[in-house]
Length: 388
Ligand SMILES: Cc1cc2nc3c(=O)[nH]c(=O)nc-3n(C[C@H](O)[C@H](O)[C@H](O)COP(=O)(O)OP(=O)(O)OC[C@H]3O[C@@H](n4cnc5c(N)ncnc54)[C@H](O)[C@@H]3O)c2cc1C
Image (cartoon, rainbow, N blue to C red; front, side):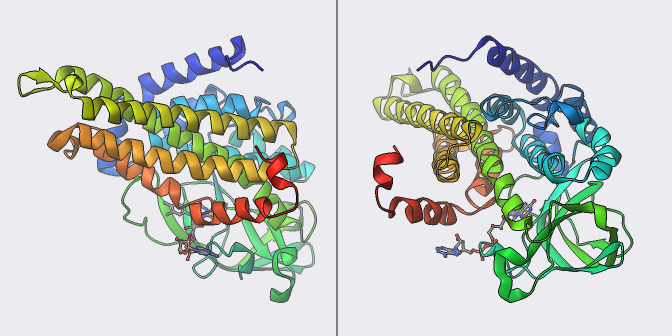
C-alpha cells in the first residue's frame, strides 16, 4: 500500500495548481460578484487537457485514472470552486458520450468538446423528479429517423451557455420506471429548446443554472446513447464519477479555507497575542485539518474503487461524496468563524467558500440519498465484511 502520489500524479497536481493560481484564484471573487461564466478560461483549461480528463485517448481525451482526475480537480477548486465544478460536470457528460455515443456522433461532436471550445450540460433533474430521478417525464418518441423530445429539465448547470446537452428522457412508459429511460445528445440550439432565467442562487455564481424546456425537439436517432432503456444506467454510471468530482471539488475548497485560517491565526492578534496562541482555536484548526485529510483519503479510496471496477464502487462513491461534502462545508464554516467579522465580508474569500461549498451537499444526489445508497448496501448479508 503506497499513499504517496506517483511522479505522474505530482506532475498533474503541479500543472493544475499553476493553472488555478494563474487563471482562477485571481478572478474567482470578481466572477462570483458579477456572475460571470468564464468560458474563455475553461477553454484554456481544455488546452491543458482538463476538459477531457478521463475520456479515452481515442477521442483525444487524457485517459486519466479517476484518482488522477481527482487530484487535478481538487487543485482547480482551490482556485475557483464554481469553475472547477462546472469543468467536472463537463468531464462527466463527455465521458458518457465517449463511451456510449454512436461513432458518427462522437466524430461529429467530440473534437470541440474535448478542447473545451464547446461545453456540455448534464440534464437529469426535472421540476417533479429530483431525488426520485427515475420518475422523470420528459419524453422521447421515435419518429422515423428522429426522436422527438417534449418536457422540461430543472437546475441545469451551464444551461443557456453550453452548446451540447446530454438529456435523459423517457422512451418507455411511466410504469417502466428506470428501465424506460434513454439518454440523448441534444444540440443546445436545436429548434424547440428554450431556457429559463439564470437562477439567482447562494453560491456557484460563476456558472449559470437554469431550467430547459423541450417542445417537439427533433434530434437524429444516432444521437441516442447506447440502446433504448439504458439511459438511467448510464446516467448513474456517470454520477459515480461525478460524485467523486464533486467530493474532490469540496476538498479543494476546504483546503483553501484551511490554508487561509492557518495564515490568519498567525497574523491576527487579540488580547496581546496572535490567535495561534489560543488553544480553542488550535483545536478547531487541528480538527479541520484532520477531517480534511480523512475526506481526501476517502475520495481517493472511492476513485481507486471506481478505477478498479470494484463491484461496490457506487457505495464507496456515495460514501465519499457524503463525507467529503459534509466535512468541506464544516471546514469552510469554521474557517469563516476563525476570521471573525472579516470572514463575513466579501473582501475575504471565506464567505464565498461557505456559499460555494453548501450546494455540494445537495446536488448529484443529496447527502440523504447518499446515505440511502450506503445503508441499502450495508444492510445486505455480509456487507459489513466487504465495505471497510
Ligand atoms: C446549483 C445546482 C446545480 C445543479 N445542477 C444540476 C445539473 O447540472 N443537472 C441535473 O440534472 N441536476 C442538477 N441539479 C439538481 C440536483 O441534483 C437536485 O437539486 C437534487 O438531486 C435534489 O433534488 P430536488 O432539488 O428536487 O430535491 P428533492 O428530491 O425534492 O428533495 C428535498 C429534500 O428531501 C430529501 N429526500 C428526498 N427523498 C428522500 C428520501 N427517500 N429519504 C430521505 N430524504 C429524502 C432530500 O435529500 C432533500 O433534503 C442542480 C442543483 C443545484 C442546486
